[in-house]
Length: 78
Image 1 (cartoon, rainbow, N blue to C red):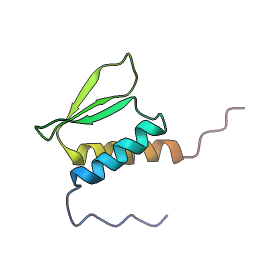
Image 2: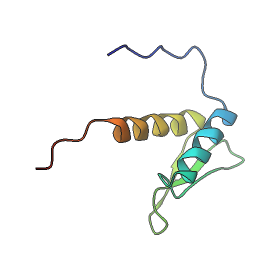
Image 3: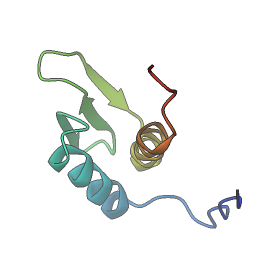
Image 4: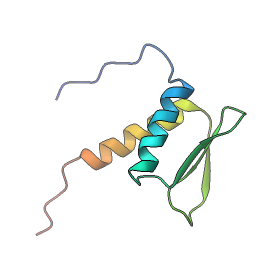
């Protein structure tokens, strides 16, 4: 496996917004909304709790974690 390149800059609000939009459209998150304080409100399920993320980097990290989880090979369920 080839290691991923390291970032040379912090994720931007636009990048986090794009990832949040994809995650919500694909129904991997219920909601992800930026607030004026640079924080993000994230809800995994409609009836679930709302989590507060510190900023865009946390949203991008969440997107990476979800990608890793959804792309990982699943164990055999025989």
